[in-house]
Amino acid sequence: MSETRTARQIVDALQAKGFRTDGLSSVGARPDLGEYINQLWARRYFIWMDARHRVLSQNSRNRLGSAWLLLKPIMDAAFFFVVFGLILKVQREGIDNFGAYIIIGVLMFRATATSVTSSPSVLASGKAMIRAFSFPRAAIPISAVLRDGLQMIWAVGAMLVMIAVIPPFVTPAATWVLILPLLALQWMMNLGITFILARVGFRFPDTAQLMSFVSRLLMYGSGVIFPIDQILTHPVASAIIEANPVFQMLKMYRAVLMEGALPAAESWMILGGWAAGLLLFGFLFFWRGEASYGDEQQ
Image 1 (cartoon, one colour):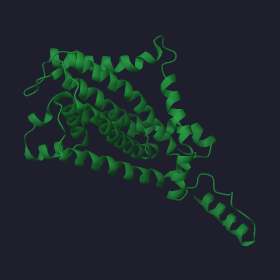
Image 2 (tube, helix red, strand yellow):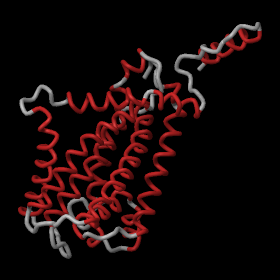
Image 3 (cartoon, one colour):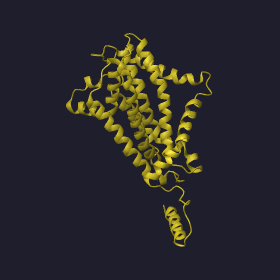
Image 4 (cartoon, one colour):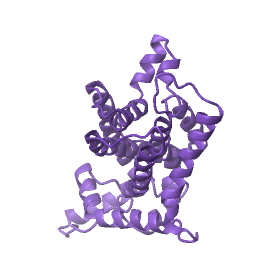
């Protein structure tokens, strides 16, 4: 920070002598919030192309190529269904279509779990670019979440086909269009989580190891593979479950896809509040650390 102050003093001295300093700025310094957002908007095409390129190239060395974007979510959902639905016969009281229940839970939880586990190392993975170029560092978390969002499109397609063809079949309904606003809220929530964990993980790399445990805890506490709200009936436990945005998110996906019903207004408020709150807090939290992301000691 002393180098940043010195640079600022030099600019002030030049201005005092009448020199123009319009194009001068301290490398790595944090711009004000409005300018930061403008810089991000100016780089929107780069963010999009970076995310798209990474999605298309990640399986380029495999013989099946991009087909793995569709095959992997199908295999994941099938694995959990066979293990928990057929072999272990997990508690399914009140669930008429357990196959659809677990497919929706596993595939829609996956995107959020990816944000939780990969976010702490997202800045470390882009360290070379951070040191080589001057750009708003928030572009890196945004690109990562956008990349996951593009992959999620394949998972959603696989999910809709699977619940429609696996008995007992789910008949497509008009409420299926509501997965679009739900996906938008989930993307907002994922981006907020990524902003927060990216900064925390940059300062404390051990966070990446902890998040795998947090992801598993979140999985079993959100009703991904069994109806947790029917098993835990203690008032405090029930309140915690109801306040969990991932639980509400999966509950809403299942309502619009399996039941053809509109999610309750309370669910929209809980998920929407978490999504907006995490995104706003996460972005401001990440922006506050902007000047530190190029530090050599990290």
